Image (cartoon, rainbow, N blue to C red):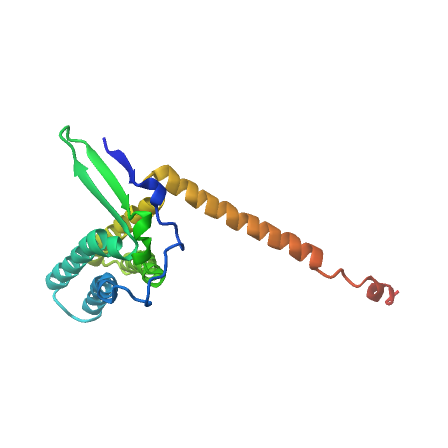
Length: 214
């Protein structure tokens, strides 16, 4: 049974939007390029091979290779450098699986660029959505072979997304669930307040106009 290891230095977790801005908008331009480049290349190769008459085996192997490189790079390099987060798994002597979620200490937060952090999280969220669209297209067009590739791509992208979200939430699934619930309740409260405000500011119907027709 898998066990969760608490986030290291949990009091120093970098909160969303609170990363310090270092000198220069891009502190690690090459890391940003690799973060976006491998996952973009995998999607581009997939789309081009689907549009043109290319060998499916070659397309499958190339896309899987790019997806695997992207998964390893994001999990071990770009996440640690761009947002100060890292997650990994190990098996103990008893054969139990443990998940570890690490965050950079507060004294090193100045090395994190808010611009790079936004790019990191945007790419981490957008590409699973794009692969989800590709998956739906494969289902609608009944392309079973591409459907399998889409499932692999979606699982790899979602694994990294889920791992880093749990790093941000302190390594606990309960914290992730609570964060989502709090966000949903906040949106509901804002919508209710907006509806109430529109009710009070809405102009009443012109009663005098209806009486003039009598």
